[in-house]
Length: 287
Image 1 (cartoon, rainbow, N blue to C red):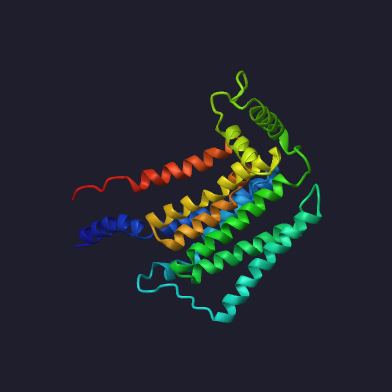
Image 2 (image 1 turned 90 degrees about the vertical axis):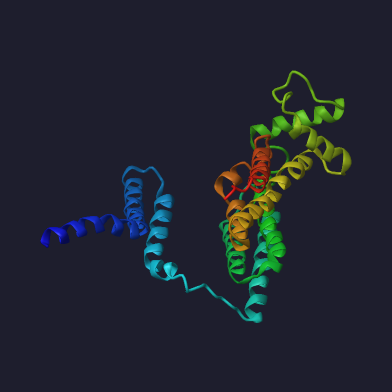
């Protein structure tokens, strides 16, 4: 009898591990976050933000685990109309003040600018939680405004064309393309001319100069690629997930890093479009 009990206990251990696998992973995340923070402080590797993010996310999951795993419990947040109006006012005031700061400051973006952008992002994230599908278009417009604000703040932080070495080179190639009326041979981007031809077309069709044409033809496309991120999230899960994914994409560090208009910036645009087209065209398996 005792042998049967011990055998059943041994067989039950893997099942318990499976049932609590998420808790084990979250606990490991807490330890990993603490370890990364310690190593960052001890050896000056400056990765405290990553360690802190892992630690906070894992600890929050452990704290909210029981509530999240209850299938019958759903998150319901029904704010009053007054709350919704105030939240929208906060968003537009934060965005407007951040743009004013960009206009009146040169060569740097003050800490208040980043605080205002963070407030705008929090306002949108909160709106995603209580909004329904019919407001998804308005929320996407807000996300686009945040993206253009962030990317434009970097590009126009300095006057002229002194934002990085690449920008000066691409300005020159674009000017030559406009003057010659064709793709310039014997230059590094002869076999990938779409960046410069787009900027040249923008310059010819609008009163914008070359510097502004490059921003409008590339960075605007990068910002608008969040639409396909939203559509991907909506297709795979639901509307709210798509909106949250679009919001996270617009201020992701790699996206911001490539928001300066260079040919590689178009890679994000092409990737999101191609990925979306692949997902929606995957044939359903026969059952």
